[in-house]
Image (cartoon, rainbow, N blue to C red; front, side):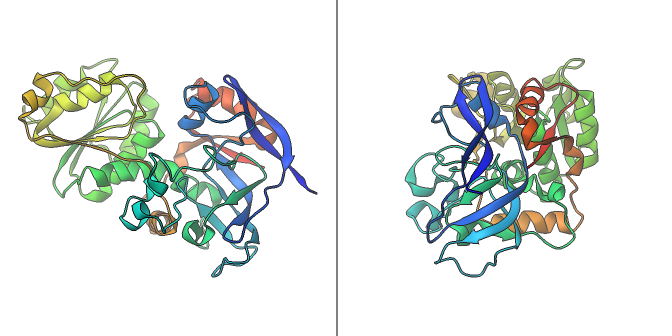
Length: 351
């Protein structure tokens, strides 16, 4: 068998299942037989034509699978081992990688994001993993595919937002939006030592999940004003760290307005258009505020650490998988996920 099924971007508004050749691998690559993957919000941006990729590209960047073949230069792994690879697949050798900026591998913005962006992705039966020795991580015995499915992107990104915000023990943190990334930011803030976590969303079911992951106060913006509520909860002080996990002007500005002087806005959203910062929200530039952005950290050591957190029992993200589809039904899965129907958080796709 020289072909496989793969979800392919055809044109804006159209991703379809096609037959494609099984990827060929080079000396430093690995071929992964995909056992479980998922759809990301970024894939929906691709579907809608809001993020440009080449027609004919296989989409997807969150693989769990089994090593099918290894390039001749790859050592330390064996065919048949169960592994994951991060959505970001850094080379580990360029200046940005060696300087600690692996997500910007190659010196280009988002250069570390290759699968489903600049090379064929993993919503398929097989996927090529570049720079395998820098990116493949063995899945610990006893962990299921769904237990580790969030590690390649959603968990790494959400935790990254908490880490970039430099949350300290005893901090008060506000997180705007409790989609998959926001929920992982909530779990990450708890692990980082925040002792008061306030989350904002408009869906009660998501707010309930956030409580299970560590939220102390939940605010439904459809019923209560988030800014007023947060300032009341903090007695007018504001929060130490505000995490923006949606990517809109409204949530970005709300984060600024609830920050204490000297606080940090940790931005995870993907924005379109122009962001503005109202004069009073940043104290005319004199409030010692910090604004940081994060692109999903990748690489095998990052994946090892995230799976260690899951294996320890400190975080359980399986409740985030709300729907399951076969690869044959991925067009239906995209329709459900892109329209956010039926309480969907994340879907598991199994070839």
